[in-house]
Length: 240
Image 1 (cartoon, helix red, strand yellow):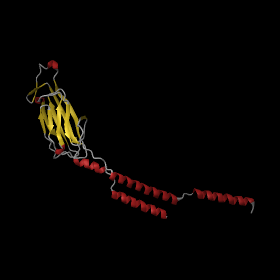
Image 2: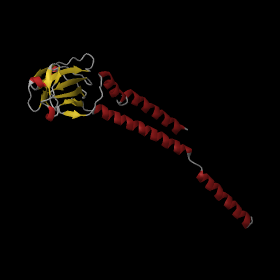
Image 3: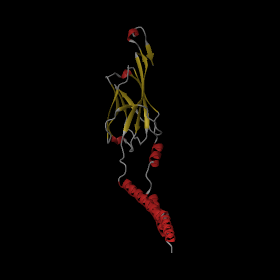
């Protein structure tokens, strides 16, 4: 065999070996994919167990939102002696309209027995009963029947059952230049309630439950099925 022929065969062998090395090992790739699938299923299962063992802490909370406060009448002091304005038969210098929304923003119901002291809206500075012209309940959640009573400078809410998402509005008209209101209450499991400014969406019990269900983690049965399917796929790939 001549040297040229030997070198030709050697080059051909090297080229063949190089092409063989470039050929993907599909068996190894399939095994890696199967293992990754199984590992992902195991991780999801562990997360589900952790969520089940350590569920989200349920919150007990009431919020009071000032959704509107408007000065309807304000008589300038320069013409106060020359101008008389009456509202429902009462002479007024000011007329201020405020709407507060009270709602159970937590996950737990609040029962009448939870109220050590009722929710009271206290107007400051101290005023007389004639300056709270009108106070009424509006937009209460279905079957919710809040009752309020006006006492001196206080609007008091009788203890009541409020399920998660229940809400109602308190409409207040006063003969005050502006309504400065503080809240006094003592409710089991709830810190002091403060009036917040802003707008809040009415949340009914049904939509609240639906939202919680939509955000709930996968069930244990679903995780078991996923684990079984992943294991079967992994074993099939290994047998190929």
